[in-house]
Image (cartoon, rainbow, N blue to C red; front, side, top):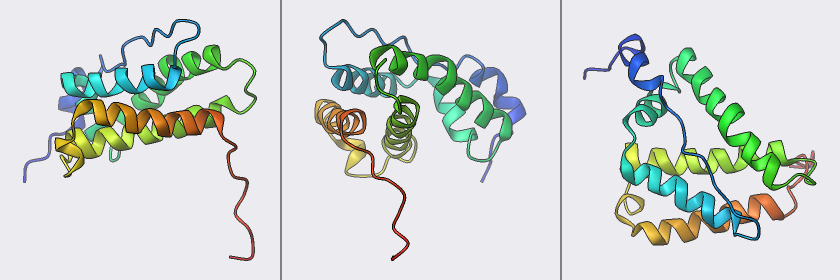
Length: 145
């Protein structure tokens, strides 16, 4: 099995980014974000795909993905939820959910997720995002487990 070297993929992944998330006041942030993220995946952004493939095993790619989170993703969530004291943790949970969905649907092509209607994926992911953004986050695990 041929595995591309990260150094050869670096130039393709340098441009990896998410489109800006434009959420008008009063709009459903979770729905808007879910739609944008799924639509990016449906569009097959090659640089983002290379970055997602390389990140688990290449430190440079991991740093680039962290940069996407820090510079593009987190500021949008902070602006949308300025009064939420734990928004960084909530945004990280949202990012983990959407990155996981992207791996399973677009890279691994796991069924039945890979063949689900994109509107159904929009709705399902939006519900999870809404939960992460608005519901209490559980505290530390109990020592009695």
